Figure (spheres, rainbow, N blue to C red):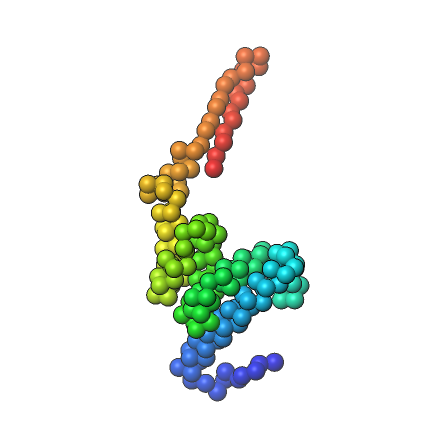
Length: 171
């Protein structure tokens, strides 16, 4: 059952309605963040994740992601306001929550929120990843370069049967 019938709208009206749905989704997400964070505070993370999983019928992974994003959103009023006002999407908030969890003392929300408001989700994920890399102090090393340096290998030939043995540790 549809609450609103889209068949009577022209293309412009459909596009406007899609935008309004995104705004409503942001308002609901910001409200949900407050409820989830409070339930987590009172009953624990497991209970909050279970409530999301069972009452919203989402996967455990989705519940965990929402719980993490809700915690960051509830702790950061500017983030909650930007989400509720439709300036950013849930995916922007997820990326900020990831950055905040990876670098809790670095002020991810303050540093990234303006970028999130002006960038697509794809662009912003790259911006947030670059910001996180800069926080690590790895002198601009890419993930591939870090992995290359971290890999280790050892090999030898067993004299008793001539078989080669190789042990490798990859990141």
